[in-house]
Length: 284
Length: 275
Image 1 (tube, rainbow over the protein chains, first blue to last red):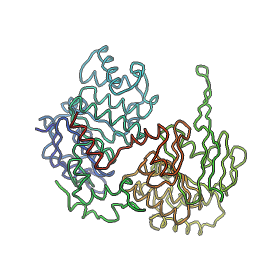
Image 2 (spheres, chains in turn green, brown):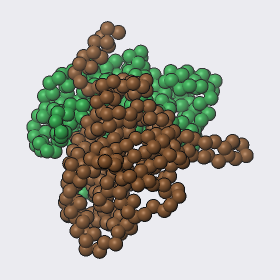
Image 3 (cartoon, rainbow over the protein chains, first blue to last red):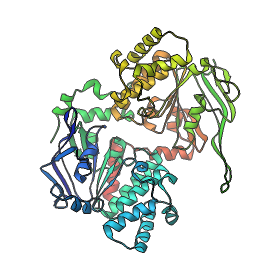
Image 4 (cartoon, rainbow over the protein chains, first blue to last red):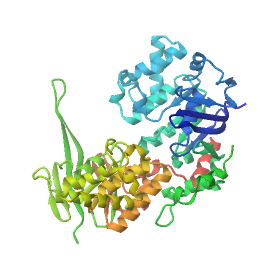
């Protein structure tokens, strides 16, 4: 049985111009210890499908799915309070902008200890010890001193490490990383990706990385899902995706990489593919 | 031939005033950087955040003065700390910023955004301004009907086209591009890079291209300068720098750049299976 299973997920938003379908029948499976990458442009519904699975979307969103199961538990049928016991503990998420997703009014120590208090019910001493241990794990120097700092006193890379530490605090079975390195420099990106991969291997977590960076996919993923405008276009293991992409869209995406540029101009997707052509090869 | 832009030993210090509890501090953001760019060429400046590359961009764009050192544009010495910047000089250098969502005024129409530099720096008539803006919209791949629209009606790639059009309205000699594609999707990034290449051919533009994405730099640059803590640790032609990086930091940077070719993936999977 898969750790995390989505079948035919549809997310619709009610807008003034009628319902807008952000995710249109996406299915995926993640096993324990597996790294799945979801690639797509902005607006392809990659973040929304994960937020929907965690129940973090606002009330304007209508979420339906044939299956939405985590570790044998049906997430759709859960009450809000039951879901909160799983989300943040067994399923954790790292958000895109580390500085924006930490609360500027509280110290990072408070924010990590809050998770430990609510989900694990540790006492004050144990919380502090665990927080120091976690900061140490993600490579923040002087963890004991750093606990008393506010997010604005730390750099983007450090804040991202704090986010990762918070996400890992309850030893999640599934970690969802939404563009974990987009706002960071390449050298920091490398450190963060190495850290995620190391922790994933050590703890045997399932890991979903959402990204639009093909380089990040190549460096981390076991399996890849390519999404476009809310639909799944292709699913393949990482090597065959790069070696022999099946859909036109993936091929176009790969040839738009400056690394693969031949000649003076970069091929662009809009120039030679229409939506119909892209969806023609779509898988379900 | 004179260089379009020449910098000799530029430095920039920021003074952080002290208080009752803190001592005053001086941050050396740029420490003696020299370079030169010729017409129609692209110099790429690479480095991590905080290495001084945006400070350098502000100096080159004549927004901030350099603390010491000389900057020559078209052979003329420029020092905005001593004399006021003339409209003629302002027209020579323009800048495109990183985030197209933050740099276009949401309350102004595209037409107003494009004509504003002309109002400030030239005495052109309203009709001519409008004609020029229309022509520029087409140049950057937008349409005349976009003239009366607001920035929120555009996608990120289109907004970056508007920002590029605005920078080109004054027919600059030198365009400073501060991470112009890092906020864009891969396919849109390709479109904007193509546009920049076309415009460079058409207007013989000189680019100073600031980026931390080495794959983009390798694609677009003629010369590359790598900055690290305010110093230029490596400076040379693209071929030299990419083939034989001399400084340790450049090597670290190359090693950290994710590689998307099949051989690297095979190597990684092999390592993973072995572990």
